[in-house]
Image (cartoon, rainbow, N blue to C red):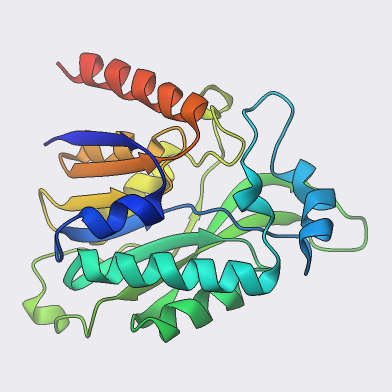
Length: 239
């Protein structure tokens, strides 16, 4: 197994990678959620950028039209890089899930469903449901193998309730390692995984623990350095 971390812009780096390299693209891209315009997203950005974490760049505050075209672009490149019948698994909140699904369909992915993560925490809204879930779009690059021919002999749930351990929250939108490991249960052994928006490196940590190969791209220098340190520590623990 091997983990590779690259500092740079995913849309500039992905076209340089050879086609059909990865079994899956598993990622948590910027949601650009909370408004129809850049101004509205700037007002709502505090929900996603807490004071104790490094801030996102302006790419997290696109308006809806800009965000659709940006999402379409990275999903198109991700499909080129994914092997036949490979997966994209991409997180979203409820506001942007329809946009993500449209962009995936537009770029040729075959939609397979939506995974739900219950965070076991969330802001209460009296008289309303607690907003304590996020979602991941699941698709494939073409039609999956019939289940009797699949090399993966598991069928994991499309729902997981998993709290975010405070010690793992190194980034304002961090995901639990156990969550990312659960998503990887649909992959064959020794799979190759790309995370083009890898943040603090949780996808790569999960892949390393499961014996998969992984490549992560992160554009924000401070977060990239954080991911570097985390992966180095993880590698030392696995020795």
